[in-house]
Image (cartoon, rainbow, N blue to C red):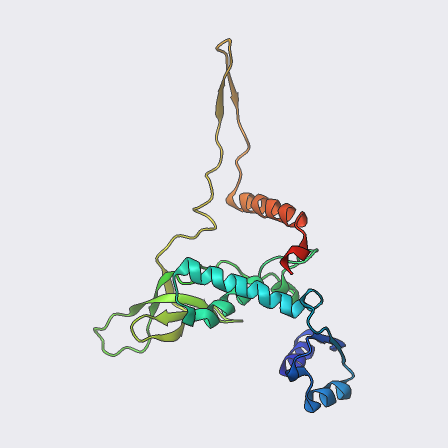
Length: 231
């Protein structure tokens, strides 16, 4: 109910239809009365994940959660933080046949991506609750995720075993979006049988262009994949 109110307020539109499974939370008398009072169509697709987009997304998020936990080395107790991380990054990733970014469509503008970092990486965050004037200003932690509509990060403090929200964060690793890309290709010297040297020069390729080429190859691979193999 709160999500329906948020959608209608933020997007200035009316919810016309909702699709769900045949779970008990969607069969209560209060829920049916609310849907009828708002004139919203409720489509139920019991035991059919292929027809229920929400259930399919749940499977995708769980696959991402397992990947994040395995890559970061975090324990299973961090599954909720990993799920929030996957949902946040997925909302900023092109998807669907039109390759639209969900958060761009929601905000009606391009989302910032320069703050994205790997989940579980080591960070140092600034603690503004100084116990003393001589206490260190930055403490060690692990990145858990991000806070919507802000520039804040969610940090796991390894000493207090608690989640801290902070904007002032220093990352100790390099960004995989730039430094991990192969350098631009320079002049290439080709040796021919008559010992003549031919110099060929390729146009320099920027890191951003290399990322676009990489995404294009991924998109082509995805178009040849049969979606039914996942069900």
